[in-house]
Length: 180
Image (cartoon, rainbow, N blue to C red; front, side, top):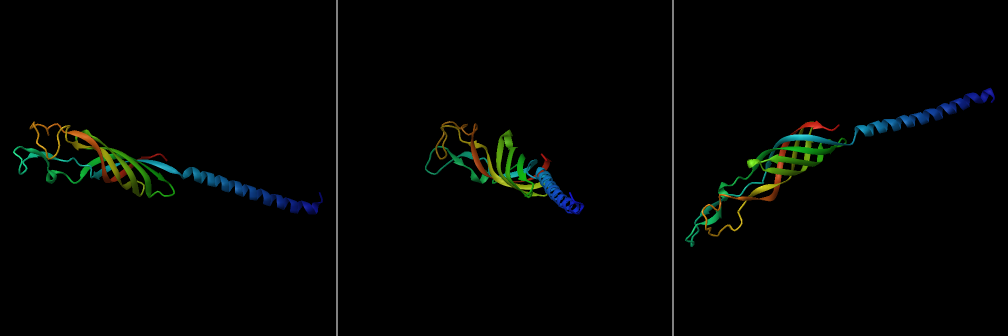
């Protein structure tokens, strides 16, 4: 090869090499960035409030009925149930301020478990505000006992059963650990 062509050929080869290496390094940088970003799972715990409250019944009198009947004492019922829960929150590193999936379990009075399903707004790497649907047991009348009807046994309300119900919930949690 003539000496006057070596220099331009070397320059072209260098440009092609740098172009390929530049694209390769960009691809490697993009791959490293992709490994750093993605979905993350956070373990959080905190305090929750829900509308999953127990109804309260009592034996009372109703005008026109000679015997006592089962009545609901709404003035003695709680409006909000307070509790503590642990959550698993799924969020993406590109949008770290929202956790579209938040699953939790908590304990309420009498050691009954409540399950929480919803979303969360993350306020930094540790605190979050979560809300959604709470599913759990609430008190119910035993079989054969009906609200507004007379009962044969005055102890009919001492052995209430439970049934599964759902309601709203909201909570404030703190992140203890993340997968990444």
